[in-house]
Length: 92
Image (tube, rainbow, N blue to C red; front, side):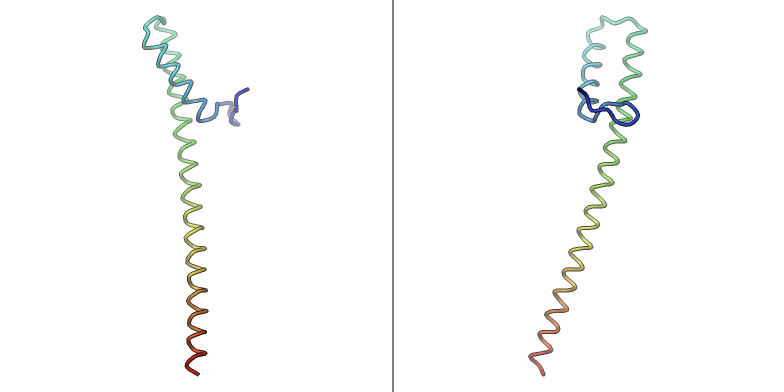
């Protein structure tokens, strides 16, 4: 069973496999012109789909990195505040 996306396109991995199969079929030269054009069109559709999937994944990664950096900055700020408070206790 294939994993279909909401617009009935296969997953990234399945798309890449299908693109590879389309290329193999077209390279063998046994297709009619009409079949070749159909395969080419399908390949373009799959490539655009893969690009969108990868762009969404990249956006998610960027968001996670930003959130992680904010958490690290907050933790660093809390650590410095604790150290400053401890330093003030020693000077009193």
